Length: 373
Image 1 (cartoon, helix red, strand yellow):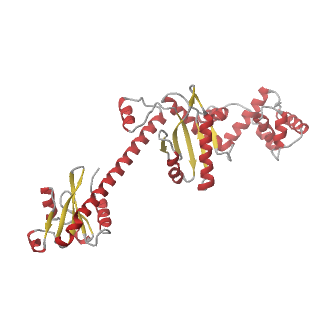
Image 2 (image 1 turned 90 degrees about the vertical axis):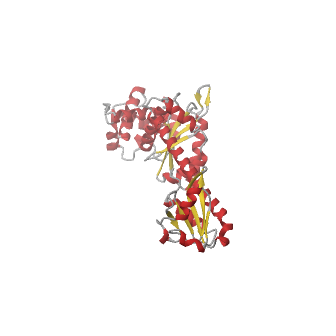
């Protein structure tokens, strides 16, 4: 870090001049005034500051001594130290006897501001390194060398902890992330993507199997909070758990596809689990790879003869309820005879009987292809 630049020096001037009603100058390690309450003095060499840098000690200049130095006024000048190194000089303009008791206070304030800036930069640097490490885990293409593990250890990251990928999508990503940070566990890793926020979330395992209910409960609480308290619509997509560091990349790709598929098939839903959408995700990935599946577009026939969309709705509910006619009729608020009529009508239009498993699969795949395209 460059300990003292013009921006930080001016911050020191502004903040210290609110403490005392005297002009403040800040000089860099070369004795050049880089910030001052008197802008006319900026960029001038301050010989008093050079004396401080040379001796590593404070230096006072009385009115009677001004003529002995170039670019100075009466006042006191004190070294600014950071980690026991003189990084600059702070000067207070005025009669030394009147301002002497302010000197240590102003010096301490300046050093605290520099220390705070240094710590902030360290934190930001660590945050960037963490994001770089998470990005490598998501990418999954690089081998993990000793440098990777050394960096993870220095950052306090245990890469062996079981995690799964969670994607958070929102139109107000910055605001969501600001609120979300306080809700994350210590071992939750994150990176802010151009399109969404990605978490590698710590999960609970029972005998090596992911206890999904706990994760689902937590994410539902988050979704409720953002909607009810922040007024921000948020969608979550969750990949499956795969053991090992290499599994994180697989989980991330699943979450990406779960979000893509979920937005098309269930746009009003908030939480998408890849485990709930294996078949649609497979079809989506196949389309991305240019692998076309030759399935008749039965949806076109529905559109021609089913203007209200009742037959298509019935077919999807029939799939959702695993062909349980009582549940399907109940969910659609229709009589079982009406359901039987609709299933027969689907058979007439498409030549496929939804009551036969293989033909139901063909119908469902056709609908999914249409919805995903």
